[in-house]
Image 1 (cartoon, rainbow, N blue to C red):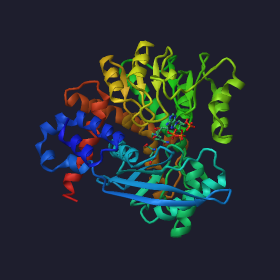
Image 2: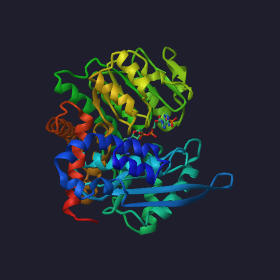
Image 3: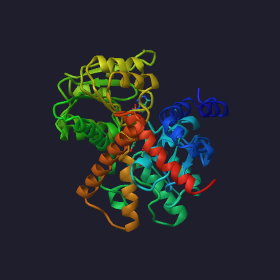
Length: 449
Ligand code: NDP
Ligand code: 2IT
């Protein structure tokens, strides 16, 4: 075990996801540290794994029955070497400090890859929006912002959405921030279009993950045309991944939520996707309802004790994990390879376990790691910040065009860094190295702070 991993494990033994994220980066950047002794001398790794600031706070609110509820709120301000802290808020019962530290750590390198000036952060709460009324969600968001507002600002820290935080939540959070500060600023991204949002921000993460896949294929002289694609999740990222796959002639055949998996061998076409979007975004329903409407599809309930996820066990060419961390274990990765999958583009953050990733490398799978492949979301967040500063709105074409340029440049940066450090074709190592070098050079320029 490396010294740095030992250090983070000793300091915070109960944060396995954070250890996993640190380990993944440490393994990739060893050749960079070996060739650049000044990084070790500056204790750059020791500084990178320690958040610049962590804010942890009580979020009390009153539910529709008049009962007081108490949740825990967090903001991890990880690194501001290249810009204001930037990263999403996650509302999910599984949220804890270790998960947010892993996400904030990943965000630092991801944001560096985007070419835009953004530091890294992440926040959220163990609040579960599922089954709550709009009024309950509003009261929770207002209480959350009643504390968070003093720590954030358009030049300090700019949160956005993640799991459980979409346009509705961003609206309630923004309204409360504006009331408390008496300021209309771009303090959050993912805003609705009529009050400062950017076109393409809702689509950006999914579109970006597909653009990244298209780049990896293009580099091999191939394309997404006709490629059967497994997609997991059914939220923001999964939906727009399927939309862009359809645009580029591919054939999505699956999606899921935390209770079950849909496999639709005939393919999910535009009409079926529109049905899913209404089901999830308007009715806030569960994916199992899809088989009532489309009985040729198969629904399988998730068995939490099973050693694999049935979603990853179907014949396909490409996989787009778009639900959550560690959703593909070594058995799932083996199933993917056995079923013919030769490309994985990660819309979710850290969806593959370390042993799963090992299998991708062993089988020469074209593997786009989350911090490269899903960087489209935060990239368009960065473009939303630019538009807010300019008090201008760009067209759909302008934003989409910039998104495509950014995803191409991330692909090239990862490929070049992998080549430079002797790991050609390894996008995982390349993305880690390219993001790392940009951030640590800025840290060194700015002294020991
Ligand atoms: P949403 O809340 O819109 O959707 C999340 C989806 O994943 C839902 O289908 C949800 O099912 C499923 N899911 C969540 N937790 C679990 C779990 N523990 N087990 C199984 N399924 C689960 O979130 P997003 O689509 O925004 O986020 C999906 C992933 O993409 C996350 O990893 C996020 O960090 C990442 N990401 C998001 C970005 C964005 O811009 N939104 C940007 C970059 C990455 P259910 O409805 O049952 O909860
Ligand atoms: O993981 C991520 O990159 C996000 N949830 C989006 C962050 C952002 O600030 O848009």
